[in-house]
Length: 120
Image 1 (cartoon, one colour):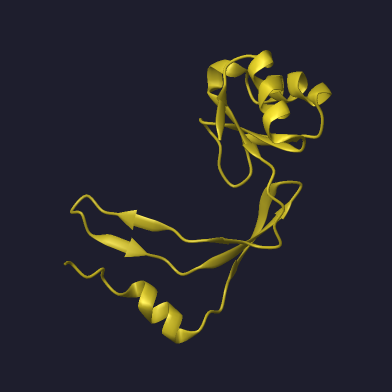
Image 2 (cartoon, rainbow, N blue to C red):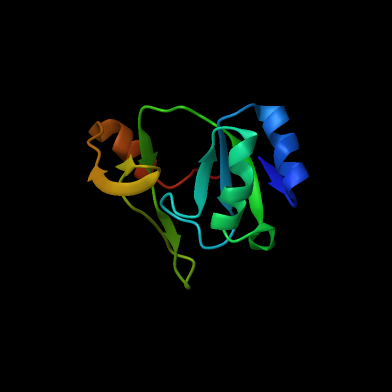
């Protein structure tokens, strides 16, 4: 991950990671929103504009091809209680989360993930 503050920084990230690049906003970005894929240096300027500019806090990640994306939400309450929700598969269309599907995993794996961590 590389923070980019100007177009030259974005081009340097492209030289470092090669293209395809995932450009992301640090603010108002979730479920595939607030990001875009640059396929070449010619895409950078329009993507930066579409994401709200460098003031939005932009960064670049190397493109990572994947077959599936799994997600887990862990939430902490005001009383410091922690809840872990089940693993789900997220299915994307044009880099935007379109469907969230409950993923079935073996009960032994599920049991291990729901146990409290042991203290030394």
